[in-house]
Amino acid sequence: MSVRLILSAPSSDAAYRTDLIGRFVAATDWAVELHLLAEAADYDRANPGAPSLTDELAGSRLPAAA
Image (cartoon, rainbow, N blue to C red; front, side):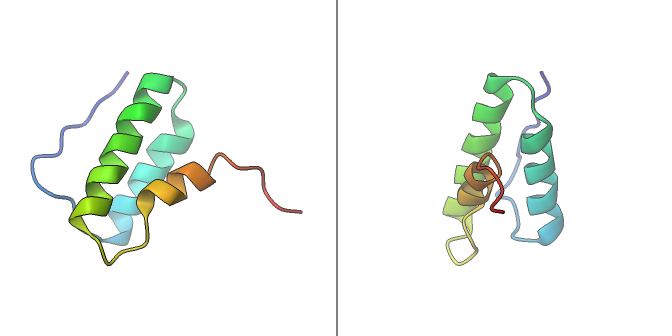
C-alpha cells in the first residue's frame, strides 16, 4: 500500500486530478481506494468551484455506457 501525504491544499490543476484518478483506477486494495476518496473529498472542499473529484472517482467504477 502506498500513501502520499498532502502537505498543503492541492491546487485545481489538471495534472493533480489526472494523477489522483489514475492512482484510484490502478488501486487494488480497498484501503488505498478509501484513502484516495478521502483525498478527493479534501480537494473538493479546498476547490469548491472545480468539478467534483469525488464524483469523478465514483464514476470511474460505473460501467461504461454503450
